[in-house]
Length: 284
Ligand SMILES: [Zn+2]
Image 1: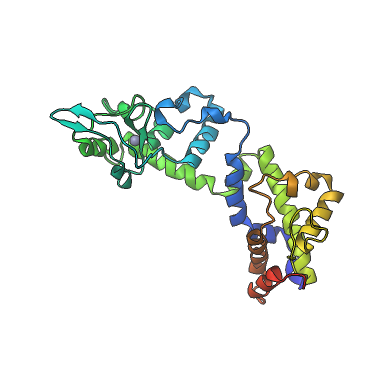
Image 2 (image 1 turned 30 degrees about the horizontal axis):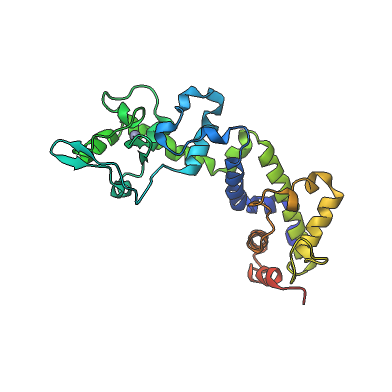
């Protein structure tokens, strides 16, 4: 089996999908931005342009991770408009994924325009981004007017939003723009974990045991070997197991399986069935 594991960089490449997913999670924990700055309610947010230009993308990342503010099952405030009492309706979210509602101001906002609007905005349209929109009469026509044609400010913002989200999923992008401390720690954790997975696969050893709790004296090959690695390598020890973020320890059975499957991509002759058996097999 050893011959299949000679090209370590290729095996790491195979983990790209997992890495992209976890890198995204790590980025959301970025400690350079004060969490309290990121407001769910669109009326309470500080405009992106008021931050230093070097952190615009990090602020956007936080908001993209949160998604648009779309409270539901809410009693939206009714106001007399024309002959009728009117209010916002959460059913509108279905057709307008950019639509946000501020409970603080009882007004509608546009998520894409908040994140990426720049330069000229058509007169009357700034309500969706700066002060909020709350005249619900003929609102669907107003939504349509806000979206506008292909070259509208809204559609330009939407395209920027989509590019931003796609770019965020690219590992090459994460690497090229330089890594944060959390990303570096993540990479060390990932590499150490892949090393352990490779070793167990090469030796044909089962991964899991009956008692994998942290106090168990004999957890399983996977956890024991990872712990041993951390005890002998400070750089690794500082970022794995109890020193890893709670949601990113990379020790769950599903992560072990993902890693083994990623290695199996390289070993087409065996396929991943064999690895699944190894991962699932307990000590006995
Ligand atoms: Zn918009």
